[in-house]
Image (cartoon, rainbow, N blue to C red; front, top):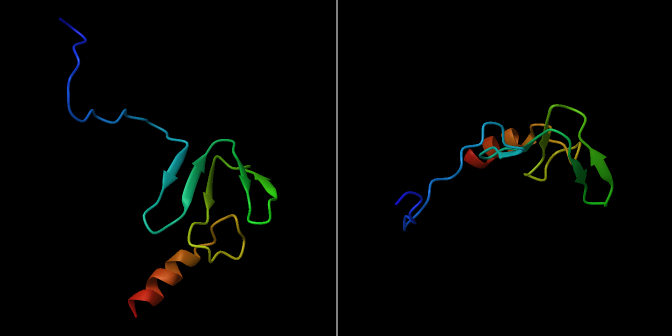
Amino acid sequence: MTGEFQPGPQPEPQVEHPDVIFCPDGPMLLRGDHVIEDEDGNAHRTTRPVSAVCRCGGSMIKPWCDGTHKLLRRSSRD
């Protein structure tokens, strides 16, 4: 019988171009059109093919990433 139930973990579906990518120790990358709400409740529409959103909280241009996470990671190693 085809299509039979297979117990156990199933493989994740393969997505060629996911809309959201979480970079390890870095920003969240958004592909395509999205609206991001900042901490003050202001809406920001993405205008680039790929946008980087801050996840470390240190960016001076929130909600967008400015690369501060690299400095934070470096200073935590010292």
